[in-house]
Image 1: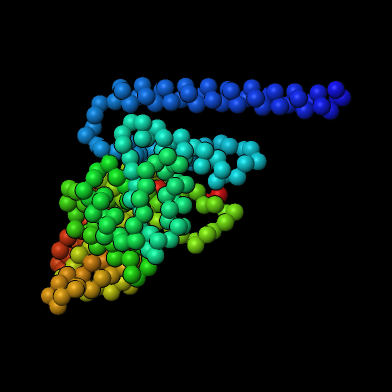
Image 2 (image 1 turned 45 degrees about the horizontal axis):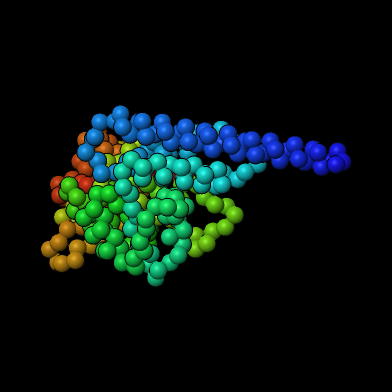
Length: 285
C-alpha cells in the first residue's frame, strides 16, 4: 500500500471514530433531555414547544460554528434534534395552510419541525384554525400576513382561552441556495408566546370608527413602539367595528405601558386590544 492510500485510510478511520463519538454524544444528550422531562413539574401545557428557547439555542449554535458547512445545514441538523426531543416529551403534530396546495409551505414546516413530525396539508386556513383551536397538541403553519387576502388573523383577534397565538416565524434560517416560491409563514398554537430577546409582536386594536393608517403609525412612533400598521379591515356590516393589525419590533405583553399609551392616543373609539402573539426575529445568514 502506498503512502497516499495509508493516509487516506487513516483519515477515513478518524472520520469513523468521530461518527461514533457524535452518536455517543447525541445519545447522551437525549438521555439528559429525558431526565429533564421527568424532573419537570407538569405546567399544564399540552406542548413542549418552546419557541423562544429554541431561537436562542439556534442563534448560539450558528454564532459558534465556524466550519465550511452553510448555516442552513447546521441549522437543519439542530432543528431535527430539537423537534425530536420535543415529541419525546409531549405529542406534537402540524397542520399546514397551503393556498393552492403549495408545496413550499410543506417544505418550510418540514425543515423546521423535522422529518418525523406528523403533518397534514390543507388548502383552507379555516380548517387549520379549527384543528389548532380544538387540539392543544397541534401547531398550525399559516401564510405570512402581508397579503390583502390573508384574513385568518381576524379569527385570532377574537381572543379567548382556546384561540391560538402566534409563536414563531418560518423560515428561522433562510436557505440562500434556493428560494422556491419565496414563502414565509407564521406558526400558531395554544401556548403562551415566549420572548427570545430579539422579537416582533403582533396585536390588533378594535375601534368603533375608521382611523387612518398614517395616524396610527404616527401614534406608534410617539409611544416608542416603532412598528407599523400591517392591515386595517373595515366592518363586514354597516354598524360593525374596525380591526387594525400592528407589528412592532419588541416583545409586547398585556399591560405594556407603551401599548397603554398608544391606546390612549387612539382615543375613546378603541373597543379592545388583543395581542396575537410574537415571534423570534429570524437569523440572517
